[in-house]
Length: 171
Image 1 (cartoon, rainbow, N blue to C red):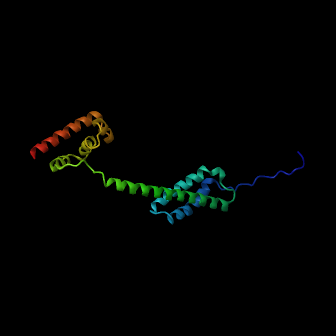
Image 2: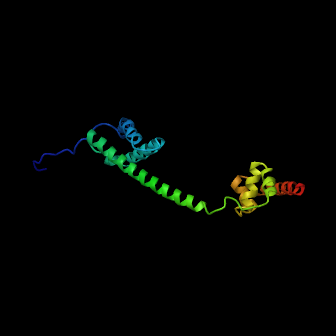
Image 3: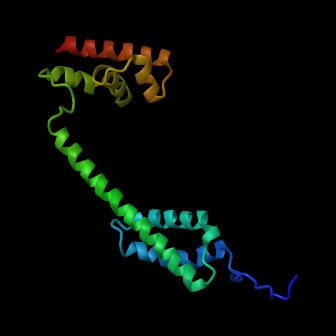
């Protein structure tokens, strides 16, 4: 009420967040394509960057040049996180590969006829039998993994065992 002039806050440019995202998306994709291997991961990095921009839209800088630099800052952070994730994934893959060298892929069997009998089953029945025998799941649990009702899994398992027994008795 004194004679002090009212100072308006800086006026935001009239570009909406959606328009800004459309204007910068191709540039950001190119940024990632030049930095990410395989190139297909660039799209994932872009989508993560655009999601962060959208979530932080209330802090979108006022001026267009600042917005663009701000979006590259977000892209830089997404790229750093992507690289860290890739390094962790490589380390875990390497550890798993080392461990798997000591694990048998399937229970050892010197009986080739048992393997042949198992191979004579349909792929779905083989998976049911191996889930029960090798992985130690109940028949109902194995059926659940395969999307089969427990009663149907028990019937399939029983038929598969009969078929394998018949095959083994012929040998």
